[in-house]
Image (cartoon, rainbow, N blue to C red; front, side):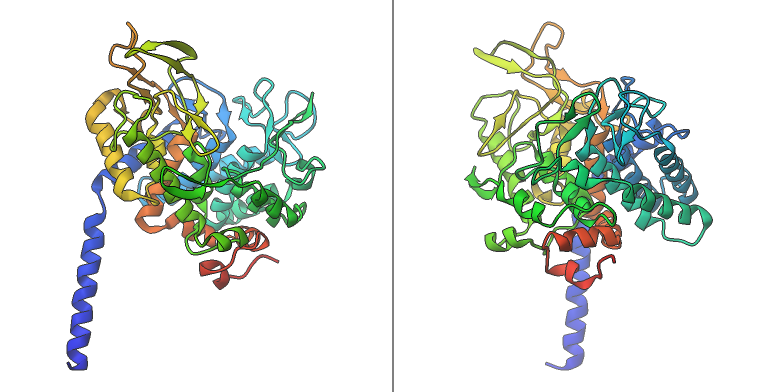
Length: 457
């Protein structure tokens, strides 16, 4: 066999492989993504950048939703939904507003304290009612802020200002204070009650919180927090999958929206022989298998209609359906795991949509099946409404309950994980952020792309 023939054969095989990859992309995802991102573009006020928690119900702003929104602007530019100049203006407005917001320990009139932000904000950027200063929602906000810092990398005055504001905001956070004298970071604080009696332990959505806390150039937490964090993990076999258990799928999705965990491992995962990406794939299959078997006989659960996480629900009530007494919930964290389980028949599209990169072979068909089966009861102007419950049968809902709202923290994973599945865009931008790299290395991650980049000084 000649060298020329071998080269020709390689070109043919490469062309075939590329063609197969192009065939795997489903245009349906383009439609889902465009509609979902349009939600952020339409509902976020251009005067403040404070993305609402939900819409069309009028609500306070969610600081976590702002983090998803800031990231969606970059994707919107790449997809040609908006011009880069528009994304710059939106991002600058948001960061300026957050930077100028009053920080202090007064119970009202403040946007946050010690660099952290309140979970929900009024339209003027002050604390909503008596909500907590939220460490995880602040972390999700800063995932979006650091995305903006790395995405807007040109030399224009506006993009330089974005980078400087992002840096100033991040340096202001006092992560050490948030440990409240413990081995972990507290879940929150209130000016009239102090720290909440709850800490970020066990595997959940706070992985990105600890990475940001470790990387801080001003108030970093000690590296021992990562060992304390992983020491509280629950590793068990459940529905055929050995993995780190956590009930709602959001815990297996949120950190992965911004960080590419493929091929990198901390000491815990080194011992288990997998990475966190594979762990999320297994967790996704747990939900799929659970719904397929449907042990509690909820209506419509199947291998194509499935997915639980934190989402809206019909109502906090108990009544009988199909001869079984059912305990329904309003907004709740739903899911299934070896250590915890909560299922009331409510399904949310973000559970499958936020897991697209992990298991496209089951998540994309699930989204299609939901759209095809329920039509405009579930699929409308901005993509999928937040949730639905086919078992919630009442005189007012004879065909089951369907939400009328979209929720920002559920829209975000759908839109951004579609882009990561497409080309890894959000991941690639975040790999350029020195704070993300520094945090991962301090947590003991090695291998893959982490070994190839330098960490921040």
